[in-house]
Length: 237
Image (cartoon, rainbow, N blue to C red):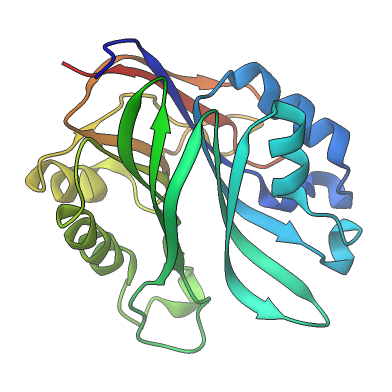
C-alpha cells in the first residue's frame, strides 16, 4: 500500500446557482484549484431546468479528468435530479446510493454515496452525503441529522478501511464531532466554510478512519456557492 499523501475535498455547490445563475465554467474553475484526489460534491443538479439542464457532476469530472459517480436524492423525469457526487482521480471499484433514515415527508429526502475507490495504489471506502437541514419552521420535528450520521457510520463500519466520510452534515462541531469520534473517526480541523461571504459556521466535514490528517483548510471558491470548499491532506500511517 502506498504511503503517499492524498488530497480530499468537500464542496456544497448549491447547484452552482449563487446569484440565480448556474454556469458550468465557473463551477469547474472553482473545483480545479482544489487539486483533489477525492472530491465530494453536494446539492448537485442534473438535467434540471433551473441549471440549464446541465450535468454538473459530469462537467466537473470531465474538466478534472476524473471518474465520477452521481447519487440522486430526487428522481424526477420532468424536473431532473438533485443529489451528491463523488469525483475520483483514480478508479471507482464499486458504488451504491443508500437512502438515509427520515421521519417526516415535509423534509427533503437524504442519501449517501458509498464507494470503494483506488487512488495512487491506495484502496479506500468513501462516503459522500448531505444530511438533513433543520430549519426553524420545523423545529417542532426531530432533528434527523444526528441519526442519519449514526446510521451512515454503522454502514461504513461494515466496509473495509481506511474509510473517508465527507459532506455537509448540517450540524456544528459540538454536535457532529462527538458522534464521529465515538465511531473512531478523526475530524479534519478545517474551520467554518459557510456562509461564503463571511464564513462563521462549520457544517462541512472531512472525517477519516485509518488515515492520518496532515493538514486541513478552507479554500475560497469565490461566488459559485454559498459555501466555500474544504480540503484535507491525508496519508496512510
